[in-house]
Picture (tube, rainbow, N blue to C red):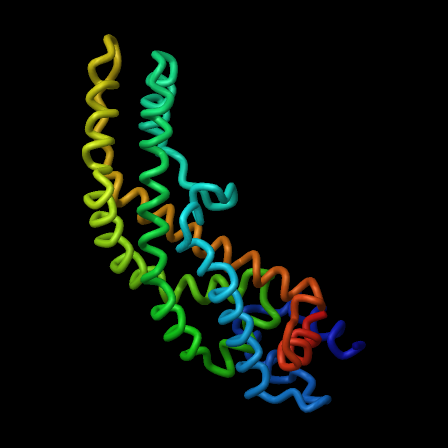
Amino acid sequence: MKKILALLIVLNFTACAELQQVVNQLPQSGGISDLDIAGGLREALDLGIDKQVSKLTQTDGFFKNELVKILLPEELQKVDKALRDIGLSSLADEGLKVLNRAAEDAVGEATPIFINAVKDITFTDAKNILLGSNDAATQYLTSKTQTALYDKFNPVIKASFDKVGADQIWSNLINKYNAIPFTSNVNPDLTDYVTGEALKGVYKVIAVEEQDIRSKVGSRTTALLQKVFALQD
């Protein structure tokens, strides 16, 4: 334990260029090898993907989850308020729901991309992640998957909008708003907006699982997770 505390103090004052040298001095007692550390990080990420991301694909996975629920973009918040003010709350609610339904459809495309990224974690990556911030693994996954996920999500969200008639719903909403006297016309790119919000939601739930594993011994559900994450306690 003293070695771990000393290492963390050193890390706080070490320049980035020296990080790898320090990381390579991780204690190897208790049978903790590079292979164990990398395997433990892969298990942690796989658990987050399986336990948290899969929930987002279910009906109301976004819409009834306040952590990731997709709200209206700023330029449409005034549309929502104006419609509710004139008694069209049900129409406004339906418009909000279809945005979240599209995200729920899209997240099903995420798992294969995440799995490939997790497989690619190197020993060096794993050590740096283990001793990094509480969301270091999530940050790693974001850097490796964000572009690919956007490219996968965007057409699925567009197709989902088409499937549920979201384009017609929002066309109706926006036309009604634009017809209100003294308002400025709006016409946002909702497909791009929902794609971005869906990505944020996915990474948020993975970060939640990572935080649990880092901070709660009871969340380390395998022997390997217990052994590896004990190093950062």
